Amino acid sequence: SRVDAAPLAFAGLWEMKKSTNEGAEVLISTTIITTNSSPEFANLHDRFPVILEKADWGIWLDGLTQAPRLKSLLHAPNNGVMRFHRVSDDVNKVANNNENLTKAIG
Image 1 (cartoon, rainbow, N blue to C red):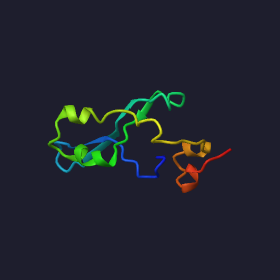
Image 2 (image 1 turned 90 degrees about the vertical axis):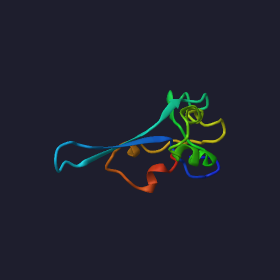
Image 3 (image 1 turned 180 degrees about the vertical axis):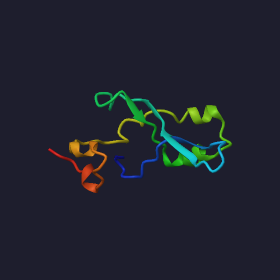
Image 4 (image 1 turned 30 degrees about the vertical axis):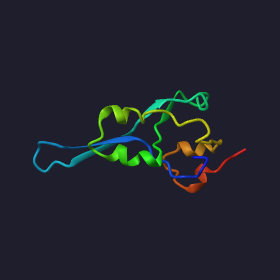
């Protein structure tokens, strides 16, 4: 979570494809963009989701923003922005879906 408790906004992409077959469903797919982990989180994982700062949300969502500007947003969060704590292994089970999954343990 963020140290300042602000919402997390991940950089992501989406695509909508319609089959050429008559009556076929539309396929919508999404992905979260990751980047190399910062030194602060490297001991947890080598990749980290790109988290957009609120000031950059509009830039990311604007279909006219040029690629070089978008690429400049693709980096790990600055040190001190995020915090982490150990959670239960129950978080790894898809069937589990409740707020207790994010509570700190031990």
